[in-house]
Amino acid sequence: MGAWSPAPWLEVQILTSAGFTVALPNVRGSTSYGRDWIRQHLGHWGDVDAADVIAVVDHLVAAGVADPARVGILGLSYGGFLVNWMVGAHPERFAAAVSENGVSNQIGAWANSDSGPDYNRRSHLGEPFDDEGFAALWRQSPLRLASRIRTPLLMLQAEADLRCPPQDNEQLFLVLRALGRTVEYVLYPESSHIYAVTGRPDRRKDRHARMLAWFQRHLE
Image (cartoon, rainbow, N blue to C red; front, side, top):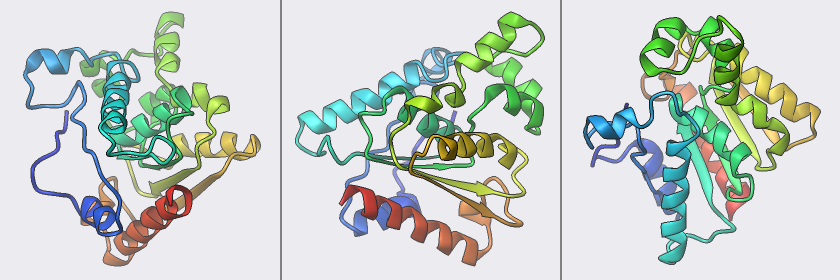
């Protein structure tokens, strides 16, 4: 339900200073557009939100702002889920991706996250109590689309993240490694879910440098 504010985040300043153009879409499910805008997203991860991202990319390409062959995608937490999902659902649209503390397996996330069962109920994502519940969670799992991923993917993960624990994202990393894809996984010790904002300065500095270097390597 987060939404971008007018004040730029540090990632935006770093990327724009290096010459990149950055778009911050407030996709369906985010706040500021009213209750109906949020409700459309409940139980539909990887559906209406993904359509909104593609609409933004199409608009930027049509306007001449973005080169369709050099589009990157970055996201944290739910944004990390969306990055993992987009590179599987739309592998031809992105030349580089950075996923941070995201979700790859909704079934595992339900069991491992500190808020899994309660959050899933409130978000209408489903619960793994029967075949229908398992199917709903698996349908919205980026891990299901792993074989389709061709985009070079950098995965950043906080070791002490209780919201989106390492065990989840390591599944996607190991699958991509087994498939021979271009993927890197970085685990930051003694770091929480939002270490990118509140973590140790050396961890944050390393995170920013890796993010920028990944996009420079694969987009420029």
